[in-house]
Image 1: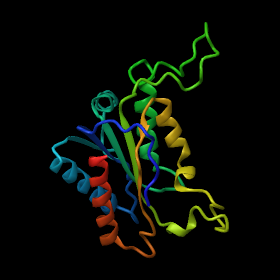
Image 2: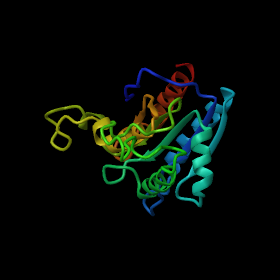
Image 3: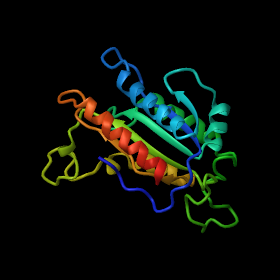
Image 4: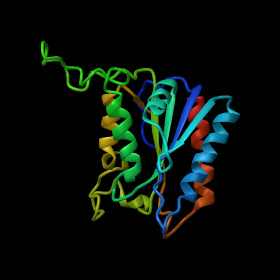
Length: 207
């Protein structure tokens, strides 16, 4: 599954990979590590500069703000946990982007006390950069976009992850197409998913 992109798609010469997996005894993270490494090799082969961070490991807020500003493009690779990003990825986003509200990643919400009528969410300073979400999940493809599906009731993956997309838009980032590996626990097709992922990365680099 691929998601729609915004019309504006900036260049991708400097790439940050964020492995958002949170290890659990039943889910050590091999699959998301495989996707992250696959992306790293593909981008390096495309002559991009690549940096990476695993949010379950130690990382520094100031370093990550610097990498967010350095990168033309950030790929967030993570599993769907409790219908959202893992808690360690949410912590990364909360701490890095909140610290960056000092004017580096955003100048507040765009409004001022002297002019509170300005649009909320217009203070982002990350224009010219883009991001994409790449997910692994147990939910099958047919669970989404179907009004008769009992759980999501017609909602898309984009709908489910709207808070992430809105947060990135708040900071001025452009959305690129995303990727989903569905049904990885009960009906996995990992070899086929990796082939689709290779094609997805190739499309990203030629877009």
